[in-house]
Structures are given as C-alpha cells and as structure tokens.
Image 1: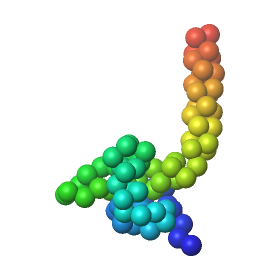
Image 2: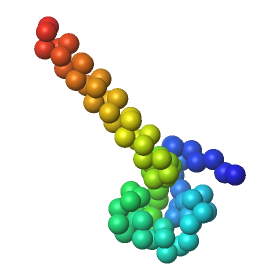
Image 3: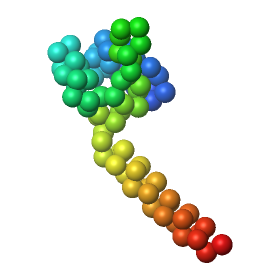
Image 4: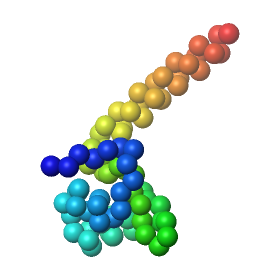
Length: 81
C-alpha cells in the first residue's frame, strides 16, 4: 500500500490510484471542490495534505480547534501586556 506524503504534489491519476477511486469520481470531487487542486499546464495538481484531509476530516477539524484555542490564549496574554 502506498503512503500519501502531505508535502507531495500528485497528478489526478496518481491521486485516483492512491484513493482507489474511478476517473469520474476524481473529476466530480474536483468539480465540487471537495478536493482543492491547482491547474498547471492544463492538468490538475493535488497536494497530499488535501488527499489526507479528504480521507480524515476529523483530524483537520481537531487541528483547527486546537489552533483556535491557542490563538485565543495568545490574544488574552497579549491583551494583559
């Protein structure tokens, strides 16, 4: 089984094989915006972290919540200065 590297850039065919989905499904996910990608030279490129986010959205949600808590804590600390 191949491992998805969060800092790697994948083509749609590579992403398709990593996720084990059909060509029409990857196109549909790109069109809906479920997978964020950039078009380079007429072809889409997808970051590995986007594929991981698609597979496990709870990890992203927890990361955002942790970041927000830390941000509030820093704001409170700065306010007291």
